[in-house]
Amino acid sequence: MGKIKVLHIFPNDIFVGKYINGFTHYINDNYEHLFYLYGAVTQQSDRQIEVFNTSDVVYADIKCEGMEQYIERTDIVVLGAIPENYDMIRKINQSIPNKKLIIVPYGRELYRTSDLYRCNDENLIKRIDEQKKILINRSKLVVVGEVGRKYIRDFYQSSPKTVLFDCLNSLEMNVKFERKTVKDRCNIMLGHRGTATGGHIEVLESLEKFEDKIDQIICPLSYGNKGYIDQVTEAGKRLYGEKFHPVDKWIPKDEYDAFLNDNVDIAIFNYNTSEGFNTLLSLCEMGKKVYVNPLNDSYYDLAQMGFPIFKWEKEDIDFGEIRKPLDEIQQAQVEKATINMKQNYGFQKWFEILERI
Image (cartoon, rainbow, N blue to C red; front, side, top):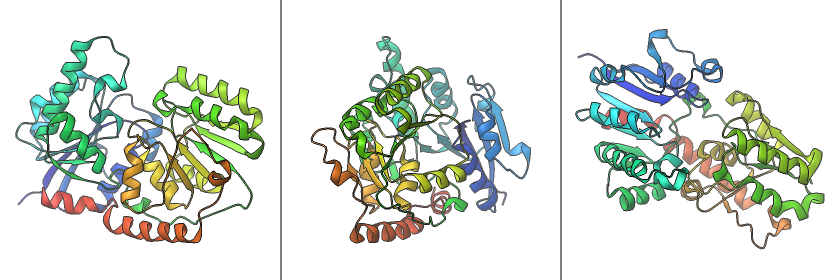
């Protein structure tokens, strides 16, 4: 019996390298993997990918010409991020009726299109959402937590099997972080990328009255919407001067994690959609104090995993409470949740999923 063929269709972005490494190095005994990466071929992605054979990866532009022939020759399709382009999502739907489909939403694209984009074409929005519904109803599995599962049921009237785990990072990323704390330091990390859903300026303005108690605001802005990034940078410099540190250059994942572990005490994610789960998970494992907008599914997903997670609410801010480090009970929760995550939510869960599907 030949190997089971798995086609992974992903945007070619900064997240894809560790994912590819995980499969090519660890989950290849019974499977033949092909990675179809669409969009711009970025140097950031290429630096992370070390595949056994260059034929394991196919690069395509956003039109994805020829994608159908790869789907035709495969047994299982893993779709990373639901496409936001109508023609592409329609093309995938037309090509996969008889294939086993696993959907790995990045987060926000799961939601109603009109909630995410400023678009006056109501007919286009309706057609995109209809294609999303078809796609989700055809899936065998969707990688989401409880909130995402409920949204799929309520909005798409669908009940596919769902599972929550750290599906994008490879096995080698499941390492134990050395937990670092600096007494009396207050370095705040604000968000993980520059998109308007993050409400960065709202947070900057709400914390301005505590500026004298803040040492640094570290604001990752290496990708996102350039116009919005410029607005956040201007507001940060105006309100906090030299204390505001935009991270506007891409940093490899391992170096980025080390940077966060060394420099961040508190993280605030004000995104009002499901965003930043993998970064938040790393911060939780590091033992950082993490505040998340409760409109973000990640708040509930991380709580479900057992991590101490705090609601970010801009009203009645108790800054003394915010800057308190985790107490002994909460640190024990981090330790227990981390062990549980490695056992039940780590990348190795792909072994179980591919066997079952």
